Image (cartoon, rainbow, N blue to C red; front, top):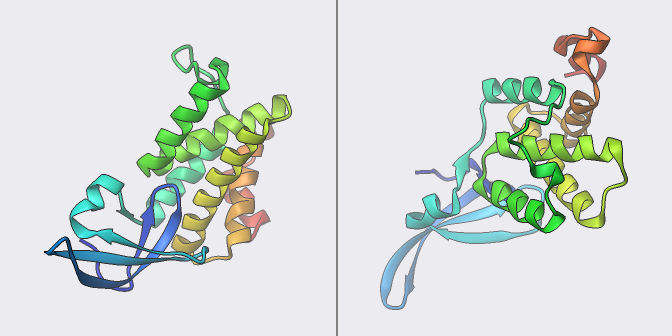
Length: 183
């Protein structure tokens, strides 16, 4: 369960603060809700406490998780035989991407981001692909900036740089990249 003033991640929408835990009567039944105020959006929602598992509300990643994401993002992109995603039709990929985003799994969001950045290097992205790329970039940068206590633009630039740099071919280390953008 979450407590007041705790920051949480609402899948697909980003980081929110639990402003309050309120009780409302719905259809004559007493229900408890988390009142969530999104950090970078002018939006507040109520989530029934008994539905947090259904909506996949989760705690923020910790520092160790972020470091693992950095490593994952910096790995060269390799399309395995079983990963047919980039060859599937856009409608199938879109549906799969939305399912992964709504799962709230930050590694899945990283995977989408890497796939689309790789595709962007090969061709111009469609409007839908650009929208998903921007959404995943925003979700990652927002969470990282809060966990690392840095500005959003710094975390966004960090993930962009990690994906674009081929560590093995350039011989750069993760620490070198971090120093270049002052994290």
